Amino acid sequence: MLLCVSCTKQQQSSVINVQWSFSGDTAYNYIAQQVAFGPRVPDTQAHQACGDWLISELQRYGIGVSEQHGTMMNYAGKPQAIRNIIGHIPGNTPTAILLCAHWDTRPWSDEEEDYDNRFTPILGANDGASGVGILLEIARQLQILRTTNQSAQIPTIDVIFFDAEDMGTPSHYTGKERENTWCLGSQLWSTLYQQTPVSQRTNYQYGILLDMVGDPSATFPREYFSTTYAGSYVELIWRTAARLGYGRHFVNQAAYPITDDHYYVNTIAGIPCVDIIDYKPQNGTGFAEWWHTQQDNMQNINKQTLQAVGETVITTICSR
Image (cartoon, rainbow, N blue to C red):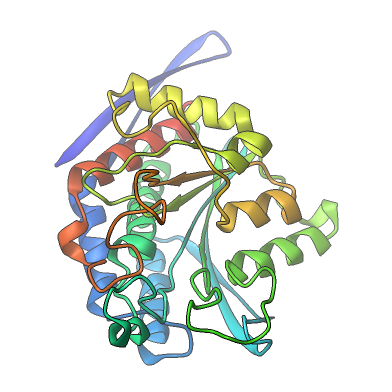
């Protein structure tokens, strides 16, 4: 399904009609292509191949791409290689917005009932690939709009695929507990961003993080860190979703603090960042029953949910 949304802007007493699109079908296909590589665990061939594919896909649409390499200490105190992938879409307004998701998958199925299965990596169709799939489609659509409609008012957009988000301490680890073992890629990016002289770094107005956004029954509450650091943008996004008819997904409920990539973008980089993440308080983990299990596959990805999220995000960033 291809859905077009119209945006009317007032600028210098003239009305500019801007149209953009988002395809849940295309986002779904992007997710399937990631899953086809197998688990994208850092330091594996599948991870390397998928990263190369992400770069080539962005470049295929004429989007500039850079890579950020570095190391962070993992849960066991050993250096973990990081490969963050950044797509840059120049805009024609003073505004710059950050869109992000993590592209790696967890090396262990911690939540499997069968203990022997807990050491098997997950496919991560939802936990990782769903956010990346939506952002690839948003990037594609924005680049099309940017090159075909010179009158369209588009902010500068940086799309960042964070690495090693899901390398946090496994449940079977019995060594000394370390802090901040999750979201290593965003910690690296945020630290380097903060160390860059103000005159040389992009002044992002705000950021949006997508994580686990493909579940058929997904509900996105207003997560605590998001409302604490980026409350006005939470309000903007959730109002936009309601106006588009997606209030059943973007619910007006508060959620407990969730340690996700946005936490470090907020606290280290100092950029207001909102986490759109499926949260299910009725479950013991707070997430879907198949979270961090072998069931995180394409059967739990829904095109209508992808449409709701993608359309909400692209409408939000193009309406300011």
